[in-house]
Figure 1 (cartoon, rainbow, N blue to C red):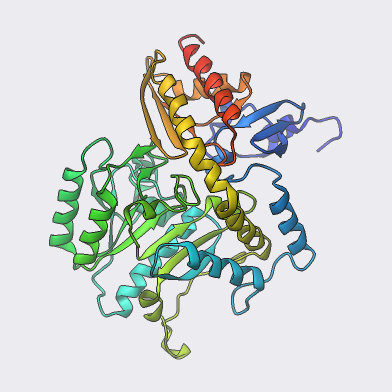
Figure 2 (figure 1 turned 180 degrees about the vertical axis):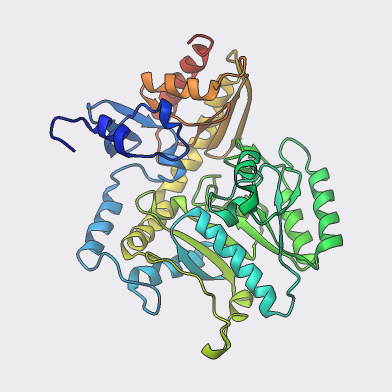
Length: 428
């Protein structure tokens, strides 16, 4: 990189960005963050309307999280969790077990939402092998499900594009219709039929509780999750709750499962677990599942999976402080902001071009009417930048998922920028 070359031009020359058509890429280089705001290299500020891909919880440059990171850095940046342990990893695991749904007692760390789901799939699969049920090798999932981008996670997803591109590499899952937009009876009926007929070969049912985020903020009817949980237990099939997007206050409770009093067999966490500071994930399981893997080393029953940066001490130290701050104040702020977010979305619902609004707590999707096959969602999000807001679309659905620390005035700013961007979408 030469001294006279801009960061933007170097980016275009050497990087390959995720989910980005690089032929049309125009970099916006972020230099720093403060609260709900991001600042580019030119000093312009933007409201972070998607929490830096749904992971920022308390805002950027949060003093307590900064301090926790610096304090841990003064001790050690990384030490393996394979055969060793360390205080931040132990403390975060204990803190998580204290707040997750009852019955989840064991924490297995990884580094992303995809790996958290992969681990749940592999642990469920191996559990049934260890318990003498080797035919239980299949997984149930919802239509349009998204559980990550690694091959196992894609295999239990229902994004048609992913299956079209990577289909030959995938383990095929069994689809149940999404209950979103319905009373859930058809989905439950199909789920019950699959469990009744095929429980002998099904290891687990994988589901995002309450809302399917990457599918377009598809909100489930009340009662679907609890009924699905009952069916899984009745038929001896694990329930894997993917709370990578919904966890840590996003739906208005610490975890979405709480709203229907569901205790899954596996709980997958990532994104907000470190407040959006560092890559970290966790897969929680029950003591009964954990016990199946115990035995003499020579039996080779232990779980053969791990990552170099599993339970990174820096990430875990920030995670401990993030969870404490969430419980002390940030969750309460989010709960007080939900009605204001709902009101803002209600006003947007009457804007020409808005087809529907979907919301679950601090997660919302604004579905737009298509125009001649154009990427309307992309156009609206690009226009929002001119009004100092960063948004990302899911097709023609514009996502709102701001930091849980957002203020009432910032919600109004988000609303105004989104409204003018939608109203201008008919022109190029």
